[in-house]
Image (cartoon, rainbow, N blue to C red; front, side, top):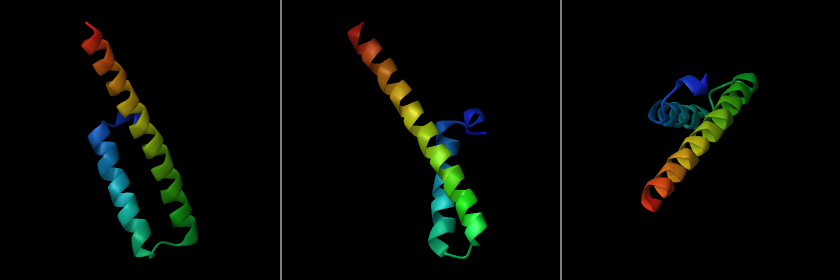
Length: 62
């Protein structure tokens, strides 16, 4: 799922999840699913940022 998203799409979805969880309107099961999705998206975003940082480092060395 996240692998098919852009960084920007993943951040937007992560923001949506945070808003949904902050409202406290979801059931426990829904909240757990949202939390799991959010965790995966956060890992995906961190990976993308790490890759971008690595590319910038390589470019700066050239």
